[in-house]
Image 1: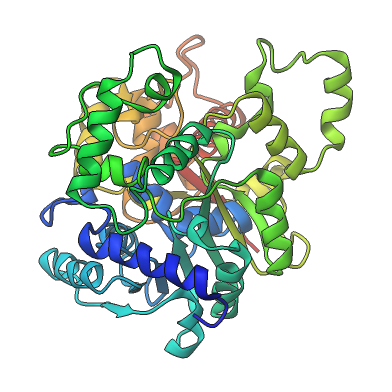
Image 2: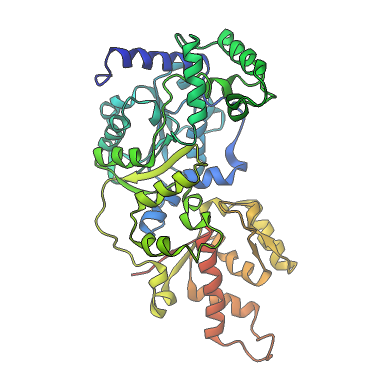
Length: 445
């Protein structure tokens, strides 16, 4: 609290009151993230660490901080996604902390601890964290660098932080709505049922073609059913927006290094053009020289669809020590180890994989993890290669030998399949599945 002036302290107290009266998120206690593989994928430490280091880590014994944990639903996702890890949740709302404790106990997680504390009080907790999740909170600070510096101080040297800021460009319409309702006095104190009713009455009374209504309102909203949506958008205390430039400035000020956007597949500048491989000449020539910051900024200026500037960062690391698999030679590939992403290792996926093999059918992988838009399928011959990955990582050679046992004969020549041809077929599939997040590759020493 020391870095807050009187006005900022008053705002913090309003934010605390808002979340005490309406803890967020309002997910039912019994709701489980087990059926949401994409959320589990994002919150699995394996994902972020592999993206940065091309190494597959073990989550056993890791210590995770959920900073601004709210009612604990993200804490539950972190616990479900990271078997054997300890989850520590902190929040300024005591009512939210009570719900978070109940939630984790309800779902059988006893290796979790919840503390009423501000982000600035993190150094006093006595923990050093492998991973910090700070979701939907950083934009509430008068200066995001304040929170980032506090988290940086309790992050292990090789640790990773996931956090996000509201986009000032994408969310500009809601900021207009907040300013209007602030002028009406609805944000002078903690907004409650009366203020929500006034918002609903006001928005419903506007003509449908009035821009504020068209851009921020759903005709189905009611004060009873959509309280959370209205509080977190039209009546959100302390809400602020930022740009990509602001994000990178905050990281530099906090001595943190940008790793990646969490939804990095949705920030590809080339995807904005009709032919991403044939950009206008000027852009095609200049794009390779642009920094990551500039590429992201250009994307947001052209196509501001992301409410959150959602990112991973960490302490500055030494220069990249691994060789990207795109640069591996034949010897590297011979001994490379292949892992199945842990979010695919479920009883349902195992059974469907077996059914694909035994029934010579096509398996749609989007049913289990869909971080991309295209439909991803696998035929039975390649499905058989994935079966042993359910039990343990495998070398490329072992996967190729398994495929050769399944398909020993070239279907065209009816001669024994050549090892080189079999290796290339499996290699192409593994490369494709790695690029789509289903598999991970490690170069063996």
